[in-house]
Length: 370
Image (cartoon, rainbow, N blue to C red; front, side, top):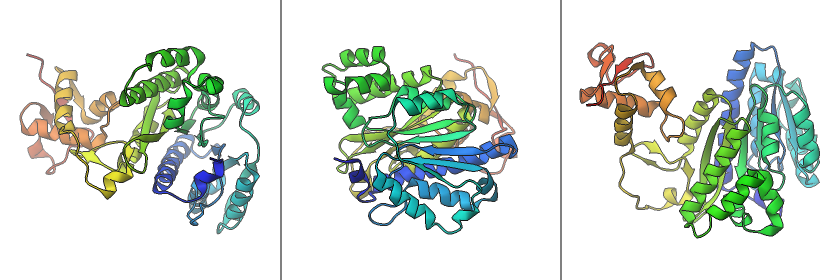
């Protein structure tokens, strides 16, 4: 399948992916502009940008990003965009679509469009320069061009986050394919890739996925990506994982923002806790899930982890949330329930607060373990 085949039609998965990236870009840009007090440019770099529009006419990610920038005075002046694709048909299509955007000339920095293959030259150049705050999007059709060095070359700088497309299906098969051994080694690091090949022997499909994602997360942490958040996409039948969108950041603030966005994009929840997955089948037909109560589990986790401590709600959230499916509203709900059950005490108490609220500043005292 050619790269262009991915863009032949705007499938729902592609729209969900584009929305996640565009929403994070907007939230990230606002935080960075405020932090820098408008003294520096910000950048959006997309090395596998594709065409400007899908076959059905809907917009691809670059156009969503540019439209948002055009609508905001600060971003019009500060945003630098670089779009690249090895396919000249894609770059020509993107250029035409950009030229047709209303008020595109209001951008201080005209979008830069490149037509080159992503390889060692680009990685080397990125490693040598000091980037300003940048959101880096890498969305290859398969895995060629995607490497730890590429991600690391960008996130090394302050204010730089990365989102990349991780084709789980093809990478799962590629780990045992000697023809693409070099690509797999570039993605995981040779030593870790060799260990993966051994560990995956005789593992069941769901076990393989967890092992591969954990190995990727550890590899990203070793290059500075302290906070890693995957979002799973299932195939059209909803039976197998097709790919993941992986978010990488050095700062918990970015992690928290993206977590909220991915939670809202999830196609299903259990007891209000998001799946961090888009599965079209869950929207089109009823499915049977294991009976679980993740919010009840959160209550027990908090009682155990914070036993004997007094802290604010936001401190509870910030210390516990990494690596869990929970977002801020789940912590508020769990703490309200624990307070109702008199398993914790809160200050101000429920009678002193507005009904059904639990502000970030509310202090919580957890009982000591018996």
